[in-house]
Length: 108
Length: 121
Image (cartoon, rainbow over all chains, first blue to last red; front, side):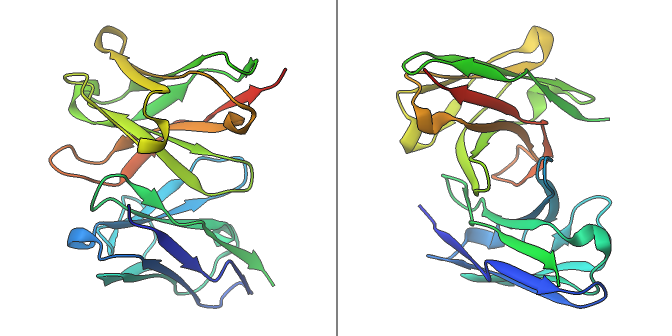
């Protein structure tokens, strides 16, 4: 199975700053089938990005995804107060679907 | 609007089984795979398996093979996940989620609210 490693574990930033989150796969992700989810305390994950760089319905354009092969990233161009949360990457290029361990974006 | 509504919290004894339901609405239930994902408190997400509501076909994560059974009832647009031989480390939050497209492997665009299962003697 493909193991996803997210870094950093925690990112401490201020509103308005740029956030860059990394997701590295143990082997190449087929067809860049990689997604990013946002999860707030007590809530289910919400799909932000699919196919590595496509924004899901209703997701603001300050969220962008990039990457291919084994290295992927999620960028939040200017952090809004509601963006402080945990972010998970997921690969769905091959079964089993696997997730990274998550990156927490916290207010500095 | 698309909704997945899960059954309520459960408390079970070690060795027992639990069956969690996920009722879909707002779309054609048989047109999209339903997955089950679990999450321990403060931990990451763990994929358990999926079911094709159209024909009942399933794929399970190797870790849960032999212990998990996923079924569906198309008459009530509901998917079920049953986990047997429960252990204390099965005390986690269980989510159902819809796969975005059924034409190929895809991400999960809608999620249930989660069902907490507590295993305790």
